[in-house]
Image (cartoon, rainbow, N blue to C red; front, top):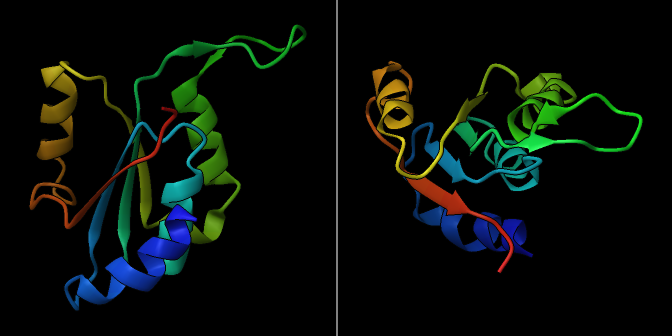
Length: 117
């Protein structure tokens, strides 16, 4: 439902240039990857706090960020427009790393948050 709303009601209000989109707490990246698909010129930054996770008893430990990166890799048609990076609330170094990248230094046109309530 959120993606449908964004495509129908938010998209017409965005600038007529490639928009920069930041998703906070992307998890598996479903919303951000959907936005990248809906907006073919958008540059999308997916963030997650890089928490440790074990997906099954037999699986090697990984992190939420690695899981997110894996989902981006499963969508190679988006790879040149979608980036992933760690972002943990209160970690200034994460914000500084994002701002230091030329692609993201101008800021963002749309900031998304999708999570559990």
